[in-house]
Length: 291
Image (cartoon, helix red, strand yellow):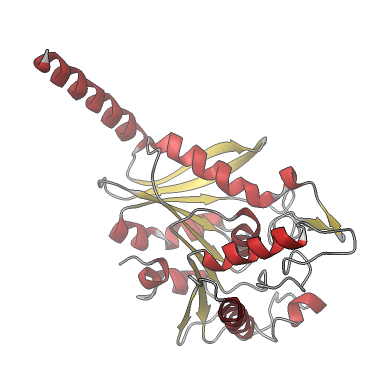
């Protein structure tokens, strides 16, 4: 009986490994996934096969160059056994209100919750885990510029259970504030509120408890493609200023309420508005709590 059990367990292990190996093709790849009824192109990278891999989702900037973001993440993936997934959010279907600001508010009107683009992340994680045969794989989120604006909204409104969320050089953030209206804060807009007062307080507390890194280039002080709306300018004059302001506000709110703060701030000297420089920096591993 014990011999039979060992044989069955061994056969099951082989089947699981075979299923995972079938999905594991070293190097770059391209596939597609239907998330929330929408078909997305996903650019992938698998490092040399390693045990206990994690998933890294990389969200592109304004120019929608998902392939270059995937490629720039490869050295980090090689060092840390990460499978890279870089979804393409095309401009035609995902304009700025839908991508950068998470699909939560459009023309001052709060959108139905089930249509928020921030929920695509959960669908992507579920799809990737199934595809890779890794049902419990930890995952990380990285967004730069427009993708960082999206990642900030995912953090604030979808409360992703990522191992760490890295928000790099965005033009705007979701401020840890109940006074600033969504999608630049957690407060109400003219058309109504996303949360009741009690819910908003709890969401703010949970937002600050997330493992989130604000990752900035010290020389990211230009105004090219900078959001200059009134809400954005309240966060600061430059991307660097806005990142510092958001982090300092998070510290102040957490301290005032005696709440846990799991955010960190990393500023790279000599780096401007470059996803490549952010990902290839020696500090990238620190931003993710990796090597």
